[in-house]
Amino acid sequence: MQVVRSIHEMREALSPVRRQGEVIGLVPTMGALHRGHGALIGRAHEGSDHVVVSIFVNPIQFNRDDDYNRYPRPLDADLEFCRQAGVHAMFAPTNEEMYPHPLKAFVDVKEVGDRLCGEFRPGHFRGVATVVLKLFQIVQPDRAYFGEKDAQQLAVIRTMVDDLNVPVAIVPVPTVREDDGLALSSRNQLLDPEQRRGATVLYRALRQAAAGISGGMTEPGRIRSRALSALEKEPQCRVEYLEVVDPGSMQPVDRVAGPVLLIGAIWMGSVRLIDNLLCEPHQGAEEHAGESACATASPT
Ligand code: AMP
Image 1 (cartoon, rainbow, N blue to C red):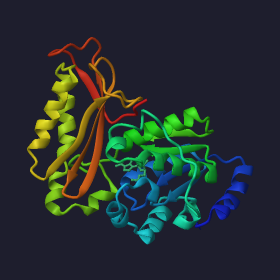
Image 2: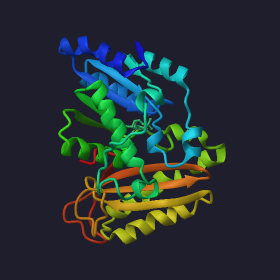
Image 3: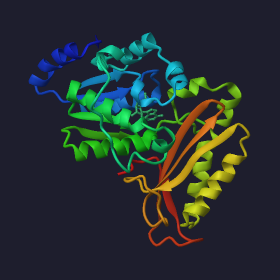
Image 4: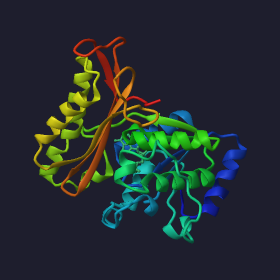
């Protein structure tokens, strides 16, 4: 596995690969790799010949210094993880390499990125879209792999690629969970044992809301209340948002009449966790009747 620290070296390393007509797959990450990232790498091996994993804790997507400073950075373990996963090249640039001077150009994805995490983390998606476009320009992948766990991020990236005609196929990968349902996240390691036990409440609340849709609920207010009352039972949990949105636009729906995304963010102490569940009501579902299929499938 090649370990590459500079943009120039990354381009040099990939030019013979591209000349040979190999399909290049990029998995952008912030490191502290876990089985969730492993699933993205696995998918990349299925769909690409040459797998590049980028590891970069991107300062411009953090709106809180404490969050940025304590974000885990176990680079040696990540190196070993990538090696074991058969990654061809790991791109781990420094801040100076990515941002040699303060940026003047940014990517701003309106509407899709404005609400939910965009509202509570101002500037977050601008930072994400900008760094992902930079990574796309550096690696020039044929395919790039993103987790459905970050559903709004996936929608933002899809919109950017579509609107700006970026020649890369975006491949969504289903959320990987612990046995108790908690979505794997690099931030989970910051939870103390009690918070870790309570952290499953978000997934349980999303499931409760999904069960409401299965039971025929179509009114978002009632569906939200179901989830919120589940969240209230966990004393350590503070709810940031919990919404029923359109999976593509990330805008709230008036009524559940097609696929909807149940999406939420909570704080367990000082650790912020997000999760989502895609729900598809049974055709013709009415209040108090009908069925739905819910999964963490691709919000297309
Ligand atoms: P991060 O390192 O947290 O920025 O995540 C890098 C990529 O891994 C993003 O596309 C995430 O959506 C994805 N990812 C993180 N956690 C999971 C998970 N539990 N299941 C699937 N994908 C994930």
